[in-house]
Image (tube, rainbow over all chains, first blue to last red):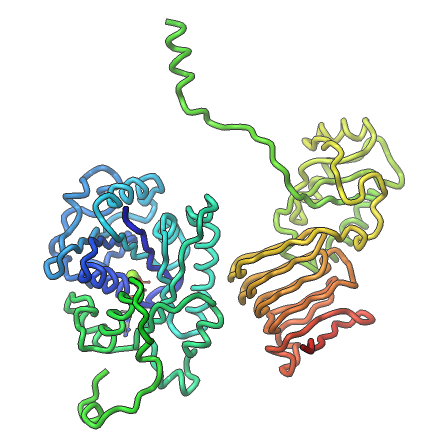
Length: 270
Length: 239
Ligand SMILES: Nc1ncnc2c1ncn2[C@@H]1O[C@H](COP(=O)(O)OP(=O)(O)OP(=O)(O)O)[C@@H](O)[C@H]1O
Ligand SMILES: [Mg+2]
């Protein structure tokens, strides 16, 4: 039976889709059968970041409405074995996500997969609520700034009160913090919150710190999840994050401003 | 044929189910029916704890009525309370005539409950403080927790954007970053205790201070907050 993991944040543009794509890819790379679902109905950009936008025929809403079955809608990743994408629809609105429909699709997926990763839309409206409702675990993505942290706090409250687990009084949704777009130099200067500031406010375990990196933008544009760029800092940070999720005890990297080496100073690099 | 159709209707999932349940409800002890006085007093209460009056269900208790006119205007009373954010759900005590009038206004008479001051006349708000509510999870932005008739004890932090409210004292064994309102029904001897004072607002029996008015020297400190001669006092807790 699969574990359902929601990638959520409250605030928009903090790196949920980037994280969903890399996290799902990393799990599949390590041999787990993984599907990543785009809950951002109406916007659709997980398929762009995964580089499969030209292979979309049917989408999540088609499956919910019984207009297609899962086999027709699931897109098999070309680079990584065991990885599937269930894309969102660009033409529907979020009301198409009914609780019964989402539950049915998730139940069907649970049978054949180890992990189901749900890429949540921003906000706390229907799409976001549906993405988190059935979750067993949550990656809460936050940027090191006050408004983002505040919204994550809000989402944590919703996970603790409005998820199926909360409603049924089961063991609560397991929470993980992903601090994305972290720039240690700026945190040191006090321009943004530090890792410790964020941990103190949110009080949940830190799964990974993803540094601010140009590579993310470049790889997104190229349709390659950044975790596959394993020589980049962001890619390596996502790799660590996945290993930690699977139980490895790794120290956090990229959290303090490093003195750049001579070559790095010469050529830049992120 | 008849049997068959009966059988089929019996197989449908029933549209509802009735179950008994216990609730803690706020009781409004009415002493007199002076509309203007009620309105003034309500306005005062709302100023002290605005969020308390957010569709709060209340039971109207008539036992303490000084003069007991038989024909109370329950429709008028209902409208008045609704307009101030309360939702009357029933009445308690009162004469049979009053109960009949209430029923006509859609307010059933509730049976006697095992309340703190059962049998006795309600005295002052302070006398009713006895239950405490313990919350062992952190209270996040957007959440609101109220402990009626007692203390509120929070084992984790209260986030910015969250609100904790109690008729009694408030204890926060984490950082208090949101709003804390103790003694919201007027108990002036109530206190707020917290491990780290970073609050957006603290209030005791309606006297309040907002973040700006908290001395920076007190911020981040383990403190207790209480009233002394109607002034809010913030004191550091020594270890
Ligand atoms: N670590 C990073 N370094 C630099 N840029 C990043 C990083 N993570 C994400 N970005 C950029 O931030 C933007 C938003 O990222 P992304 O789409 O993953 O966020 P999102 O939370 O899914 O947004 P939305 O709320 O709109 O769904 C993108 O342009 C992405 O390239
Ligand atoms: Mg997104």
